[in-house]
Image (tube, rainbow, N blue to C red; front, top):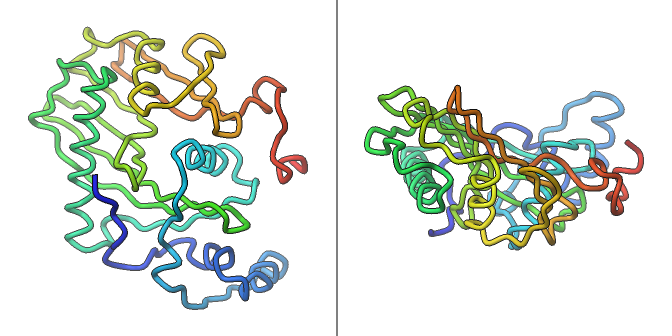
Length: 248
């Protein structure tokens, strides 16, 4: 999977906050905005919106902090794909369809799931940045559906093209779904992550700051999800939380 560094338009949402992280001269402006509720709009170079190199567990830790504990000094900027150019849309569509193929080959999605009518419907690109600027990650949030009213939503690591979070409803393949334990383990094995089992369909990812994943399968509705649940220091009272978390 080729890296997708070029997008047609600058990120439109959250760009001021992201700029304050990436450009030191804007830190004071961010503090003023938080204190006075004033808006500062300064230009951000396109290269500053390119995620920095990091391994997958590090990026998953950043993602987990951003979605479960947004107060932990992780900033983001979002670009709806509808605001991007045709090339960016086409790349995202390719990533989405390939992601569905990967999930099937891993054993997360059943072979009975009809991928022949699967169509990409849209999504967004988000860049997450740690407050000190030492770590960033690009994530594509993508959604599609089939002629059989199946819905597939996934978050994809932009660099590798691998799904790192899924939530789907497979109405046409309800009888073929695996258990939460088998689906979750297949997902984490597909990502080649080292994990520690923490409970039924719950795993802690090694090297991800204590990030915990959970899996769920609801046979009646056909819903399947594998998602970041939180962190061991918060869920189980184990480990050391990030310094910024102590003020929660």
